[in-house]
Image (cartoon, rainbow, N blue to C red; front, side, top):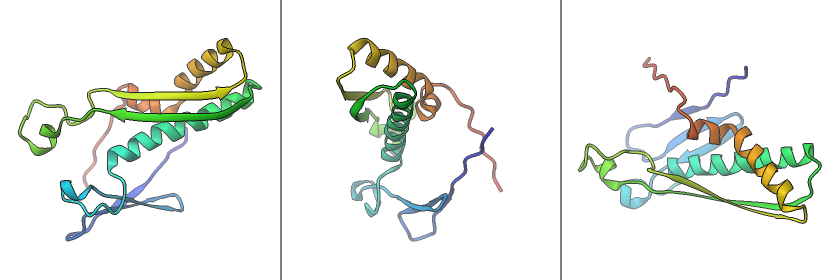
Length: 143
């Protein structure tokens, strides 16, 4: 088992949250319309980027394992949010996306059957997609 970890910090009178992920600094913010300063992508954009990046990374590794020639992989991730859940106007509205769609485009000269099988395995092996698609317990600990 491998433990992955990030550290996030927000301070009063600032809009952005600063995240340390390994040796990388990430800025998370909200657009001006939602009270942020638009200093970085919002949390859902990072989630979508993580899904796409993980899916493509898993796909590249699997293509090497399966000896497939793939020229490019494009992944667009989109989801529908209810603004009423953030504002509190509708306490029954789900705060997360009702649905997340991954639109994957693969450029390859390989037969369609091989690409379909590869895509099926990538979907099954992608850790971020797995965490989003399946209920993973999230334990909150206050210190």
